Amino acid sequence: MSDLIPQNTIGLIAHNHEFQTQDNVDKLYSSLKGNFKREWFVKHAYFCLPLVMGNQHGFILKSIHDIEVEWSGGDSPDDVKVTYLDPEDFEKNKIIQSISSHFGMGTITIQTTFSLRTPDGVNLMTINPPNSFIDGLYHMTGVIETDNLRRDFTYNIRITRPNYKIKISKGDIVGCVIPYPRHFIDKFEIKNGADILSHDQLDAEMKCGEAHGNERGDLDKYKKNGNGRRYHNGEDVYGNKFKDHQTHLDD
Image 1 (cartoon, helix red, strand yellow):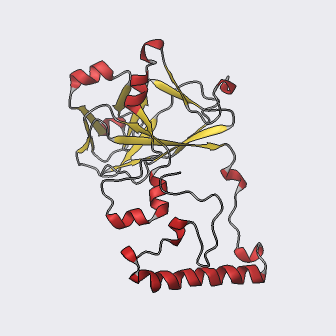
Image 2: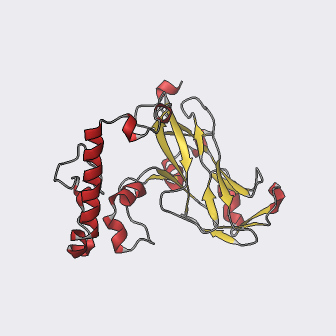
Image 3: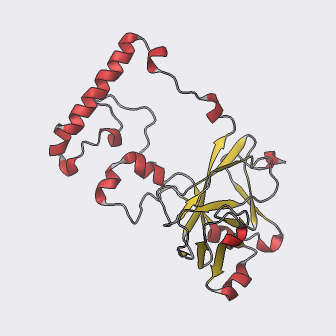
């Protein structure tokens, strides 16, 4: 059945036709592509292309409720209190999304009306939303075979501050998923560079790294904004252009 999902697509399937609306999709999910700004970034942070690119990776889940969460410090589900600040709104929208204490261990669990389906061989990984934070909360990482799983899954968040009321507001980012081919990560291993490069190649890499460090520590300090922007412009210290370089706007 998973071959019904087109390539490069995450299909959202509600638990019944009543909730299978674009409005519900838009309430809950959106892509981070092009969303490179963060409220807490200062100007200099935007000169760091790895951070700016990281901001745009994944598909976020948003809260549709105003709630308060408090954890007493214990491992029982009863040790976490979830309070909906607008109970009437919760009753109206609880099928679309619910946030509750379910598993214990100082966590809260988010469940939505949608199952997420991917093409054959593609997993979804739940991660903390890139460079986006709610003080006292950290999203747990999970890997789901969403080409095979024909039902919903939960997003689970660890509470890191006991005995403290944490506010989650409507529209806050509370989850994120990233698709990747199954077994892709399994193919990689970390090796000593001396075991895979010749002596001359290793020496050339070391000298290039040293030249980059010298440039950043000396010449770049006198450039506009104290940044030479070699990496941003897609070139090494010798001016060699990168292959298939991504810019912060992904153009």
